Length: 365
Image (tube, rainbow, N blue to C red; front, side, top):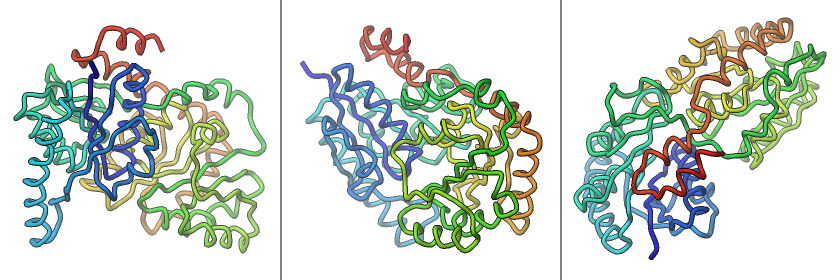
């Protein structure tokens, strides 16, 4: 008899990527996965496992929207609950786990009505509205950062599920053992705010261009623009539209310049790399700033905010890291120890509906 599990994630990579990593482990252990998403969601690009069955909801956000869109969102919420009830009745999942975003709310409510166990995972240091609601009805809530929710016996500090290949990245003690004349810099702005990185960062590297090897992920819209900027500045740079091998890029890098989304920070810490973080200033509840602050307060990263002094602060920070390469080792070692070592195992072993074989297998990885 098949045992089906509902994975619910859409909206951002921070929701979808950890969900994808958990789904892969469950599929490998002979569970079937029904993924609840939206037809235009990023999950349709990121999740390409043909063993996953997709179901779509007519769901839309409410928070921060106009009156019209709030009314539309409320109607869609009701419709999505009905759709979810139908999917649950047909597929009979043994539990559902949502990874944040407005789409998780109707599925959680429907599961609660149908007495299907609800689990929630929150990626960010500041919980989103959806997971504040989901936490009220969840059997257990997993949090990436240690103080996202108030202490409660059902709140579990799990970290973010990371793909297994990140365990093979060169450790900080080896990576930063000797001083280097040329350092490798990896730059990526993510899906939100890449334009700022693409326009602002290249000129900040001009003073140190002979001290760095640079790889810059531009996104497909700005690829030609970024190549031209580096060419005009006479800076050698490998510009990439995107990469499906981020673990290899992390392994190559000595310094990472990135936004401060939860998944990015989790990968940086798993890899054990020195990072300069530029929080996306329009992120809801400033969650990227607070994500980054968690690292900075542990001497695990440097924060530079997106403001008028950005260029000078980035230049100064790069100069400091090049001159004091012992600081690279300090940042990387501190980051390596910030999150639980095997987040996936923590999550799976705390879901009692899963069989003992899966829990034992995962915890041994």
